[in-house]
Image 1 (tube, helix red, strand yellow):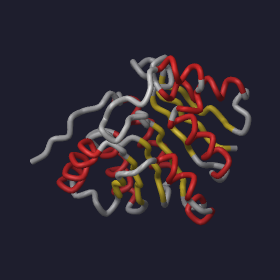
Image 2 (tube, one colour):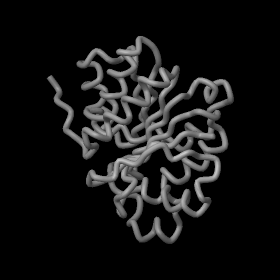
Image 3 (cartoon, helix red, strand yellow):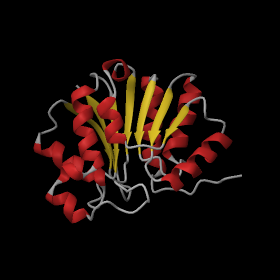
Image 4 (cartoon, one colour):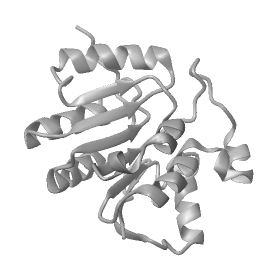
Length: 199
């Protein structure tokens, strides 16, 4: 049996993510950064299973992570609620049409900006110079134009200065959260997470 290694998503953060999915009961959930599939992907899948409806589409570029996630999700009997995709999340959200976005109810952004071989694309200093190089920032800017009002977006690494979610927080602070309601921030964990709702 494959036991997926744990990532750094805190239990309190997963309670907020699961709670949003339980509330919205979405047809589609999107996730960037599957990792090994052992924490957020499993929690999302189990929440959709409890809802009795919905599908998670989760994207991971690093093939070794993806392969472990496939085995883990299969062994957890969640394949009816989780579709794992070994592809670029930014390209995917850019290509979705309005019919897909009409069904998206929750998005969890936790992309790691890694190359397909698992190496980091850039150092954080490069992201600070040009935040649009970050997968999370780029995908967020695409999503905010296409998501329907009422869609819940959760961003991991919100309070961690070396996290990609933190770069999105800088962007949103610069816009004074135009078009978004900041529902809550889980800030007492090492990485933190923000829960936003599209207005």
